Length: 127
Image (cartoon, rainbow, N blue to C red; front, side, top):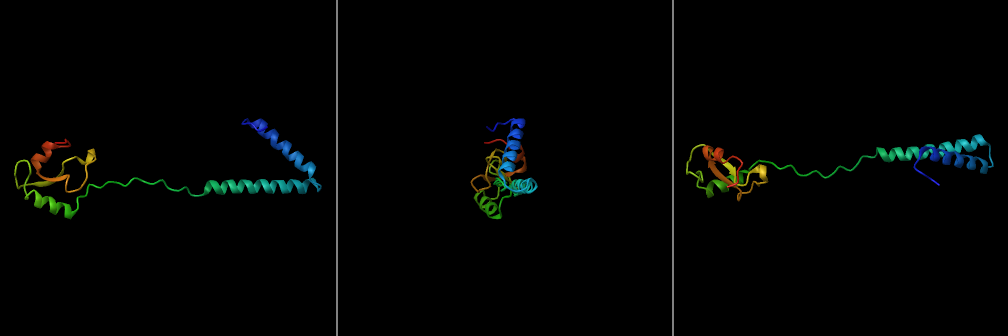
């Protein structure tokens, strides 16, 4: 009997109201008050349900470019404090072998020492 169209829904509820009022052996005003109160309670329950805070979606952890002091020490010792490409000991930088932008990690396995010149020449390439 229920359909999605607004006019048939309206007709259904008017018919339901008329049946309720005809079936209740009290004054029509009291019956109408009871029905309106009941409808108001339903609306309040629905609104309260809509106002409940939604559970936040699990956010993906933000990755950080920060390289820990421990990893820096391990890499410095492993690479003997010099650029692994040209051997320079000047203007050294910690470099991601697999670039950060391509999903590389901050572990000692992916970090190496490069001089500024070699690091700029490498850019975001994977060697």
